Image (tube, rainbow, N blue to C red):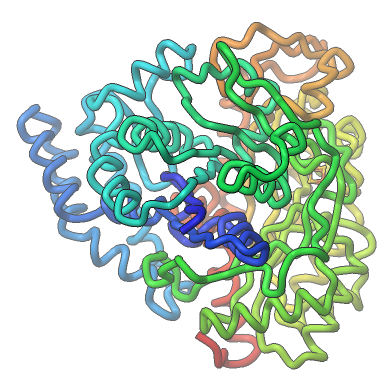
Length: 577
Ligand code: SF4
């Protein structure tokens, strides 16, 4: 094997990240013997097995924990297998009580694991963190090497290294999409470096791209990678592998590539504005080979096919998406997208497609939908799109006919002043029409909101609150995020313009920047959690499950399966899967 591409724990238990399968397919098309490994799903099952949880329960018993926690933990040990299995049953997406039981049990497993760490770390199905580890690189170094604080040291040494030793790949890539993957990903890197020093390792993924400005300060003694590649990986990774394995080309020609040099990492290639042209990806652009679909906790595998990249708007003040994708929006040509979908259906037996996209122009999504209808593909799909006036009623009707089951929208606010300050093109009247038409066509709607934008006053937030209540009947899933300032966003680059005073960063590799809001009439940071909580409470009678664990889950990973269940009853039986 030339190259093993690994997704580090902790990640989504419902799906492998799309980048893993797309990069593997690309490297193979370039002639490399590449393999993908979703180590995250293996780790999830290990840490959520009855044996592991029972062993943690013993720790709680030895430490005289509260009887209530003990009792609940005993129940979790008994229920965990049933909870996991229930999420894989066909039709579970139509059984809210079963989903509630399953998510509550998996959530409580995290409470048990965290409690049994006796304050050393926090670990659940979507999060792993060590308190204070990211204060600086000395504390991170200590935490990474301390088995008390880092259970991944033992897990990866026992479960990941033997497989790598047996497979002996010529090079390894470790991909990190979420913050939760950083400690496990770095731990794996250090173990490989220690035990298999001859294997070169490259790091990459969306999380490191999001903290691009901090990458030069990462000390190689703490993170001993041979290279870090940011942004689109296809061309850069191919060039790095060709150089590393065959001595071809020079590393200076690898775009967005950082190499260890002295006390940090130095970019050797250009900070390139080249993005992968989706027309040049092989057909199929996605491969199943290397994934075990029966490991994922979903009733049917939602194939993550990234048919577009980037955002065609790319100007929202708070957003760093355009930074991560270097601002260029691209789509896969429709004929190739249809061929990809056919191939993925044949490989997986699933006809669910959850397109992991940041945006999709209405005209292009319409063209794709018409092609799906023409090709006679009986699929169900969902995507994240803008509340763009281009989603005319007839377009939405065609999307629904082609199998669209849910659309996720970043509404952010329903107050025009706030939307203008955000440089968000959405307008409430278009939003209302689009959401209403979606519902009329059986498309479930998910709406995301930002509370506490720096210029937002409490009365402006209340206008959004009122709008949500007025439109509750056309919104199925609502997620409220508190505003945070992120590097790479227009606000992160020019905070003064929005009245923000940036404070010194007291953590490393962190995606939110501490700030003081100097806008005179806006809400203060310290008050925000209280305001957001009050808003959630007030909205609950209108969005019954808002904030409940199982809707947090289906407001995230499970939105698409949940929406498929609802729509399936309304339309036609599903033949695939
Ligand atoms: S928030 Fe959405 S619409 Fe705005 S720039 Fe980011 S991806 Fe584009």
